[in-house]
Amino acid sequence: MSNPTSTPHNRTINGRAPRSRFGHLAGQLWIQVIVAAVLGITLGMVAPDVAAKMAPLNEWFIGLIKMIVVPVIFCVMVTGIASMDNLRKAGRIGGKALGYFVVLSLLSMLIGLAVANIFRPGDGMNVDPSSLDTGAIPEGSTEVHASFTAFVSNLIPTNLLGAITSDNLLAALVVSVLFGVALNMSGEQGKPLVNGINALQAVVFRIVGWVMRLAPLGTFGALAAVVATNGAESLRQLGYLILLFTLTCVFYVLLVLGAVMRACGLSLFGLIRYLKTELLIALSTCSSEAVLPQLIKRLEDLGVGRPVVGIVIPSGFSFNLDGSAVYLTMAFLFLAQATNTDLSWQQQLVMVGIMMLTSKGTAGIAGGAFIILASTVSSIGTVPVAALALIVGIDRILNEGRVFINVLGNAVATIVIGKWEKDFDHEQAKELLSRKHHHPDHDEDSQPQAEVETATASQPDSARVH
Image (cartoon, rainbow, N blue to C red; front, side):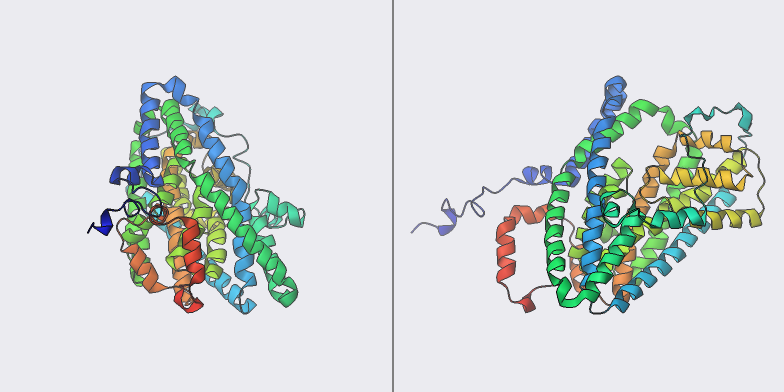
């Protein structure tokens, strides 16, 4: 009698031939991103003229992501708030999140301040600001964005629907919260609209999946253009500051975020491994927004409740940019030291206070951290504005550490608030973070999506993990 395992039907998986290990790896997005990064760097070094023309690939990818970010935030926040048993929970989650953001942002700035004061990366440069070429400083970046009035003005959209279609992240957050609260209070009358937005969210996340498949092209274009434009000199110029900032970022991730994750009873390295694709894309494109939609989905899969994810992640990308906070204080003191500008500790604390405000008003602005730095230099007036020319050339390199901490820090913040709210499946998260080779692509290989959804739908509610 023939062995049933050798039949043609069983040599396929759900009608498809099994993929080789190489084919499986080649199909994973994070592998494609790494390959694209290597190719982009190689092209930038070998053929800089050609590589410089690849920049639009990254601009197009970021443009596609920005196209979908606000709809994702709107759908996730509205459905999260509308599904809550009571609005006190929304206020409680928001209050806890903002409190956590303020503490971590302040800690990040103080770490950057301490490192710059101890190691003094700008000492000995003795730069004369009048000799600097300020042509490379982006036009308008030195305008003061720090006023409270400007911050509140950014929160108020010109009209309700316009906030959902614009790229103003802060206005979108306000409208999403108002809409979610109104739907929650509408009861049965609002149920059809809630169901409609839930359906819209499924469509939006499908579009996100398509856009994310283009991430390798964005990575290739970004790194090819950067290497072609800056060349090897960009890696040597101001190398001590780059090295010091990189080591500070490593210190922050291992000690601060590592301690927070240990307090939650989870592995930081497991979380980094789980989010490897999102972190790689953020690093290569230098954009936190590039992974915001996918990050929301991944944290829900990890076991964090939708209301928590829906409130913490969108607000975190506006108010919890810890990597940018470390950069701001380090860069400001570097400029002061390089131009021999003495700053008292009182002036340094005033600078931290101003940056705590200004860093909340530039969400979604490309190169936002440099704009915050420039506007702070302009508003305080102690450091010559021309000194910004020292750092503008390496800002793209420093941005690598900023976006890594911004993305990872917001993922950690979501887990913290989820545990705090008891809206977090700890065992599910522990199991997922302990898998060394887990990736969403794995699910696509094992079972067609339609069959997965059918199987899930056929289970009783008690058998599903929420």
